[in-house]
Image (tube, rainbow, N blue to C red; front, top):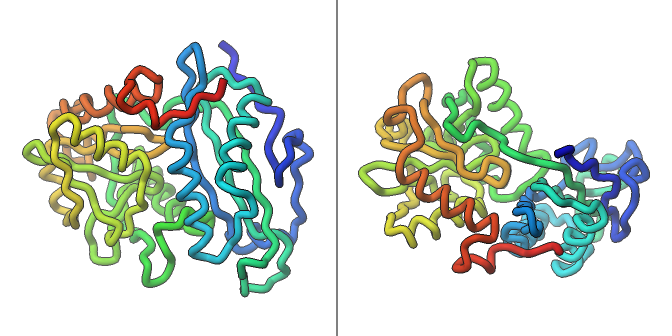
Length: 305
């Protein structure tokens, strides 16, 4: 099956052709990273396209801008309708990645951004499958530390924040790893460049708290709730670097990564270097939910057609 080529984007309340969505070179966000974004998945199950946890993504989308006083000049309902509208306009009938974002427009070189500063909003989308090998990936601890609230708010999904992630990713690829793990300012496990992290020890899930500069991940929250229903306890606490080497299982979570097993850290094996039982159990439920096969979590998906 040939992947669709999206011809239309949503830009400031209108559906326009991709090539017609243009911004001036003096757009503030290009110079200073003053953009807010979300990553959302749409899952095609041969009958309908299901958008995963749409309202939760939109809530975080708006909250991220509040930190920097960057205004989203559309209501949550308007953004949700626009996402559904752009899927329909592009006649999407395969799994896709949806990227809504808003950003500061022409504002000169003025660093004084306020709620009244001009902004633009847009939504783009494209076909998307698996980000990582679902049989497991190899990760390395980065020498770069995760940004912290003492300097840059890590809970906001801001464009500029992800330069930190880019540095860690570049380093991990140079060192032959599939992905990086960043430590927080105290040297504890924080997260991956674009994913939260879970380690499993003695049947319990451990994951870093927001105080370790970990993003409040929507997939992370989904995993915690699924794990509880399966009878597994999740503990949010600081995780020293060394503890990850003792883990029975490790996996990453994120919109793009979904639930990705980790089979080695810094060249040290995790378990038997295969997908662990708990990871497998949680991933199976998660996959069923996104495909509309689990009625219990039907409120997590929004049908497009």
